[in-house]
Image 1: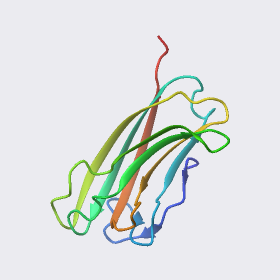
Image 2: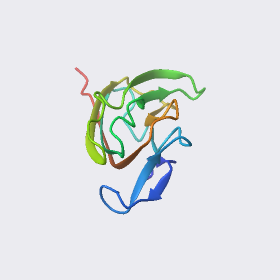
Image 3: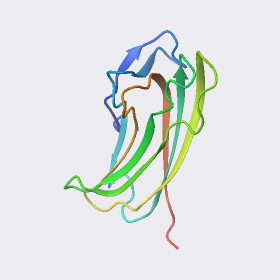
Image 4: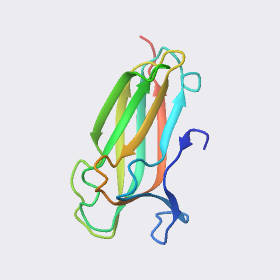
Length: 144
């Protein structure tokens, strides 16, 4: 899709659907990133991001330290908005297991020249997991 960039995309026998997954491991700090510029999203209206993803852990808890990031960046690369959250609200309990994760994040209104990003960050590069079927929906909040 035009809004997704990067990621360690590989063919994998354990893919949730299709043949490919986004791989996170010791060598992978960032995966696929969703980037939407102002204009592709309404300007001047608060937004609400919903993200759904399938996450696979070979060993339960392998992805526990990964975090999610939603940000809005200005043209000078400073942040108008930055929200981090645990990717996994609870540690995984089952080995060799896919789990559906669902995130909902209210986001400030974008101004001209800004862009919104969503990504999952293996910040300590210790987490090992696969992602599949990433889905993003964004609502613009109606002005009162």
